[in-house]
Image 1: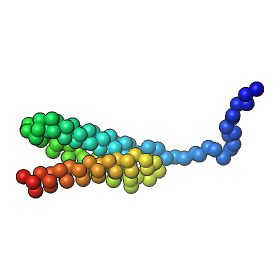
Image 2: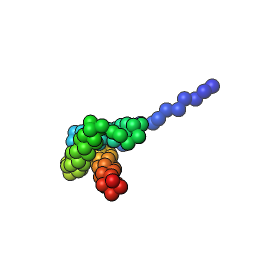
Image 3: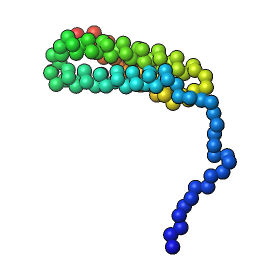
Image 4: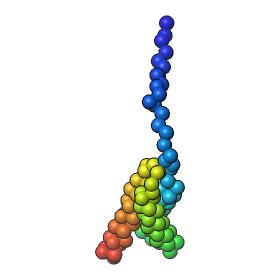
Length: 114
């Protein structure tokens, strides 16, 4: 006879809180993810065309770097919010700083090597 496992629920398993997800943190994370996606597309497209990218590809890169700056600002602002969960603000800050740092490194390498 199979015995089913039941999770015992007690009174101490509930956590009542007034915290909500930070909207700025979520938006900052989504913008950072879009910036990383555009970065991947620009790198792939530039590689497949052997470095001969068009003017539109360059403007997409600059626009993506501006998006990364906006994402950093939004994510850092959301870290300062009270009564909000910090998952998305930390994820957004990490991804945005990663994207911005990568774009800055790419532009510096382009200036030095050109």
